[in-house]
Image (tube, rainbow, N blue to C red; front, side):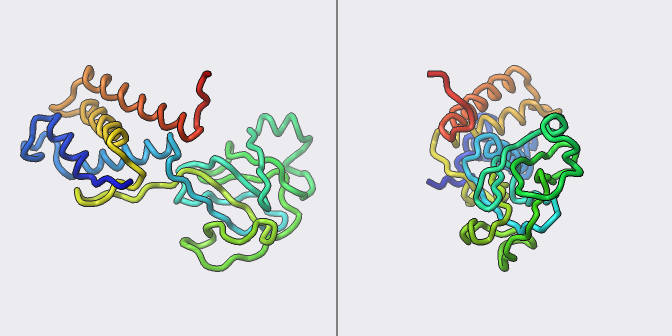
Length: 230
């Protein structure tokens, strides 16, 4: 279900007592869209409502790979279609003796800490090269399509970075109903009332933040991002 930014804009105007639109200058239309896009990005990163899968070629004896900009984080890593478990460097130091010098093989672990930003490392480095893949939306990264058993490559899965919303007639780039639209509105208002401006109001910011986080937790439970006590 798609919802345009207009509905959130109208609710923000109503809450700020500017029913005719943002004309007083306390919050500009441009600032509203900046805050709306930040809120949508945070909401999807936390809830993973919209995910993407990107595959890149594995190269023999190469352990480090770049995380595509389209993903806000990595939730799952697959090598040749098999799930690879996350680890920390401290764990690897305990589990695998001299793991950085280990002979190439079939990767069973990966880590992201102690590496350049948006980089992950397979452990151990692969002892084969996967099938080269052509086409795709970005150099080196391709939406998974071929059978993993055939290409034997690296696939990263995580929340997608939402498209930027630039106008009131544009759709919110995540599935949204009235409830989600309301939560996004609270997220925008939390940022408005927390800002260093004439609209700063810590009590209202705390209230709006609590409502926003309630929505995040509800969607996390629905999407399986958190466990719910029975």
